[in-house]
Image (tube, rainbow, N blue to C red):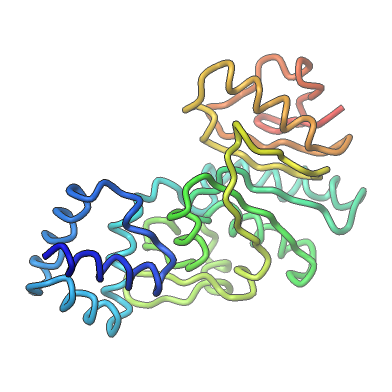
Length: 257
């Protein structure tokens, strides 16, 4: 049984880049055994063969394995402000902006950025760096397959243009995927690089202590060029932006002074 499970996680890693060994073994094994039994299979070997031959089943499996709390165009009104007010100003200063999606989770945010940018510049010129500390969410982001619920806020024309439906799942178009480079990064410990024109980090810092938050805001400020923008989540308003050399550009958008 142990050998069966170890072979399974090795094959899943080779096929998807998702490393199930990073999860607690007893818990994950129990969860997966319940899933394959429910689907009518009697071993991990049998289940992998089915996954390998059935993309729909594989999509469902991936959806279960990586708990997805993100979605495209989350808080859609803020993305509208980015598109209509913030980006035109940034693009006037730099027609090839340097953009970073920090703590990008399973990829919805950087892919949304690419779609928003596609309305203002050719996708061939869009370059977005996307980072997260979790290797498994990065692997899922690179695959670019999402359940229907993740697309609730996506404008219809964008769904038609940049997604391909396969049953209950939607795959992001390669032309959007090509604009994003994913890599592993620890916001607390790693260097941020830069200078960036736009940093997007939304609905993440609420999980950090006040001291950690302050440290990260200072690092974001240091990684932005003068006039660059930090875009935060709708529960993460910065009440003392001047402390970090920011001024308010709009609600949840901060400009580096």
